[in-house]
Length: 377
Image (cartoon, rainbow, N blue to C red):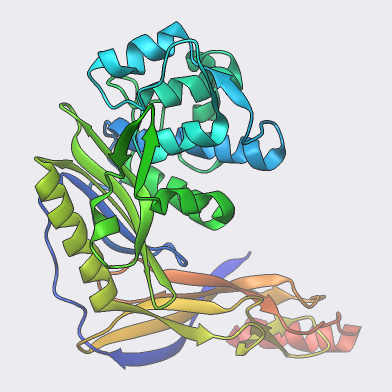
């Protein structure tokens, strides 16, 4: 019978965690972008109407199409009468001011989506890539599920109100990480502050771009149903945070809450190296092996998020299935190193065997079994 075993590894004294913060947002999630550790959350897994923040999924589909070669940045997409009617100047919503039956390049449409939040640009992209907006929305939902956005469903490319068009703050953070991490060449479009089309200049609606806190993306959203929302990212001294907020009452309140939460994250937390890749963490007892123990290590650098101030206890444990049976090959995953800190979700990394351990002879296996029966491991 295989059992789970934990080994207490270390107890470190750290400063008291940062004082709790509150927000007027109905939904909020603040993440350390590299580790994915949540620094603050409020209704982070609740389904909500994302409004134009869901345009990030439209943008991702276009980025992936560009990088796969399925579409070209200079390729001109047709602006249908439907795209103009539902998303153009006469629609009363956010628009790029496209002209019906014109042709516009993919990169210009992307700027129209990212900077101007144009519904007409979204529909033109959707129709150009999938033939129709409903077909494109199905592809959006399929891709979202592949990325782990398990509580998201998209019915359109724009975020215009629909009772079945839903996502969560955590799913939007997954989407933001995907855009930032895997599409750096195109992600820079999010930091452009203005774009002119049809002789009409519009500025980027992301309030954090003008706040001098290292922000470089991503997207605002607003409908009467959703309230005011924002998916944002900022980088300071090589450390990036991602923020999702929604359900606020005004542009001003959105800007204030977003800056407050971003500032809180940068001021009160830091990322520290705990274990270098290849560094021995501990030794585990081996059953029926030529050697009695095996060293375990990590095959990647393990950084953790910790509070900057106060003194609290950090506990690190190694959890593994026992007994650890020979033969063992270097690189075999044998357990996990888990770090717990008050107020933060556990942070963990896989532990792998540092060396081979061959199966022992009959005599050594008999001795190993006897010892295990008498004292365990």
